[in-house]
Length: 350
Figure 1 (cartoon, helix red, strand yellow):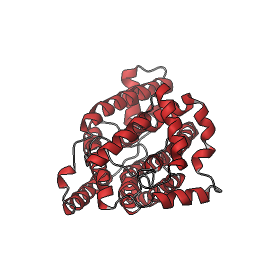
Figure 2: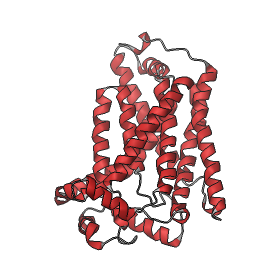
Figure 3: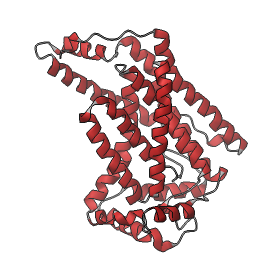
């Protein structure tokens, strides 16, 4: 069906503004809470507000170019007889992407890098607020839950294929980072599904706050890659880490490099881009599951790759040594809870 034949749905401007400002207000409250916690610990100077801005600008520009190209292709496919100068504005208009709405989205687009900066700053403080105390218990629960075997051993055959490990590593780091910005930018601009839009814009920061700040502080843990450093036995995850180190020699792994850099930064008490060590729950897995929940509203062609990506992140979180499997299950569960709760709020707002 041509985009020119699909009338848009009128919505109250006040409701639209409220749906846009609610996530920004949530991030503002989080900023106050993080600053208060850091001040109480005497570490207020370690809270950075603009750490992610240098990355956010190029990443957002790249994503906007990709989205514009995708919209152009869709407009041409749906309107083969129309010039792009006519079909593209119509396609964008059906998604609520107009000059006024783009300006209205600026606070949302600017809020994400500020939120990520605050999140990383606070994450680096967690071991000082609550020293790592849960690793040994989590590892035991993990083994009991998986029939007496550490979960990474079920995935060990993948270690025989270094290219597969490298693929998981890429999906886990640069692709994941771009998808976070991609989901946020897409929903900030695309107003064609107002309830789903508000649901994602609320649930993403809410999930990170609940899982990556509150629960991460309560269940302060470092993860399998630092199991020995926090008092665990060397032979439990040593074979996994040794194999990953060998693979790194042939196929450089971002995980291997990041794990070393993060521990050095933790020991020195510094903070920076991507700083902080926290295993339980997994924000990586929680975010990937939010992508699946979002994709359910956009058809099987979007849902299938989103589900495959979630499975890859779930496996990578364990196989790359970042998380106990229980961390990942908890991350997905918390994402589902926040998606449901934020959905109820979104239906009132949008």
